[in-house]
Length: 200
Image (cartoon, rainbow, N blue to C red; front, side, top):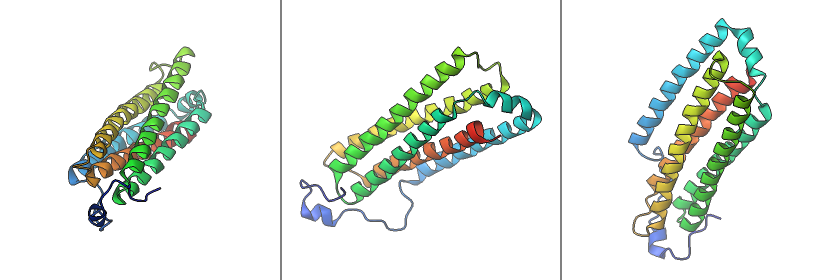
């Protein structure tokens, strides 16, 4: 799957990037990611404080979430992260067509996640679970901010796909940056899933 594309000249294949111990992407993306993780960490601590002050109320409200939907979305995002990682490997091997297909698949998983989340939101709101409830106010803020980041991730994936279509550029770092950002989105969701759906 990661064999070099036939259209890639042999000389170009010889010069293809290989892992060299450096961080994938560039420093700007890592600064952005670390900043996001810091602010999300603050939100998570705030949630834990409020939960500790009203543990029974939070637990009662939490039971109205559909754990099966949360598990499904977790599987979807974990799959998308695997596809993004495989895309980076493909680019490093010069298999640009394969990398494009993998990034398209990654983005498709992201769109599926959004559709499932919107369905869950509609279901919860239709049952009267709105921001008037303290637990659900955290739920909508966490999942809403996460969806904004996911939408941004889809945009970054689009930039990487455009890069791969340009035969004169095809910078490995662009694909790496898109994958790193996508992995952050996945990590944040895993924490959100654990806090909102699993922790009792």
